View 1: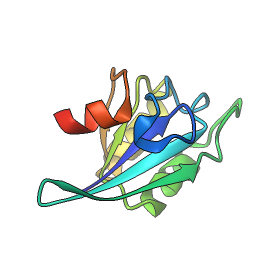
View 2: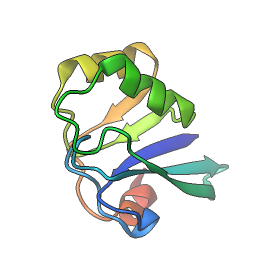
View 3: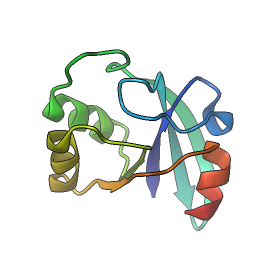
View 4: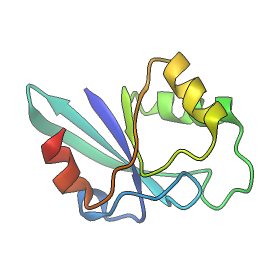
Length: 106
């Protein structure tokens, strides 16, 4: 399973979850295999500080990470959330804290 975490900065697992898409400088992408962390990479968020985000372009960005889930505090655009769900990407919202701690709970 691959999970994309909205990240406030480049610190990967030590970063806090980003509050929304435009305030998340990176996405930390974690690959889990047999319940163990296999690989982690930071991907620069091309939508950081954007005023408007095209839902399909965002979904394509997430799909390029191969993530099946996205973890974020808030998805403040219903179109984006709907597009993610239509593309079989689970949205886990209302999450706050350090990514490493959240990953242990998933």
